Length: 270
Image (cartoon, rainbow, N blue to C red):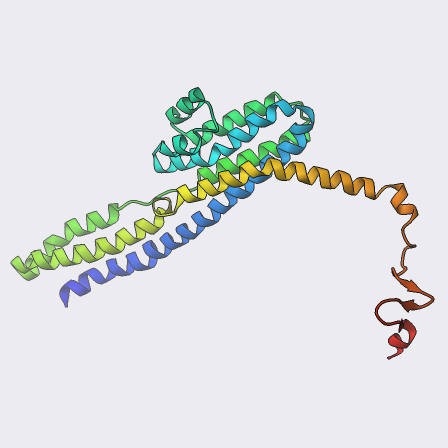
């Protein structure tokens, strides 16, 4: 019972603080990953509306470097630049890929390029502020994930051998080995959840987001055509032939014409 008594507080600390906090961090990371998609699509939508009207020649570069943010963030967080080469091989040029993969913080490098591109656009202060706000939000998401360390557990297990030796002698070796295996297993689970970027399917997320961002220009063109058609349909000619305000289409002399003639006054009384 002595080993259980000695190690019970360490087990409770791991279960209560480490595992719970790790799960909270894992859930927060999933929420942040979803917010990256929102910020990137908002930035591209605003850039199409603001920059596309005044400097359409900048839109291909803005779209390309917006797409580059997600692979750059994955490479920065996992310390593996193959995300850049796999997903951006047909998006950026060779020199741009070389420069981005050599950056110590690729996600920050992408955001700096986007800001420099906005410098070349003819934007007023409000438009520039809105676009820079999205860039700042993307930077905030990329830098929010941190990790804990194993320092507490290693120090505890190192000093645990001394009281076990006085109590159990040579039996302290298998007992300490079992305790170390169990506590380190719980710690490993906590660290695995705490750093969800190691286990999350980032490659799949990145591919899906790039596919969606590449389809946004076509959606934007279709939306512009629909808006122009709706604006023309809602002009003076359409208003002249529209029914008076408050009237019911298809109603005549208090009746609604359909499959059956219904007396509105009788229906209201019933």
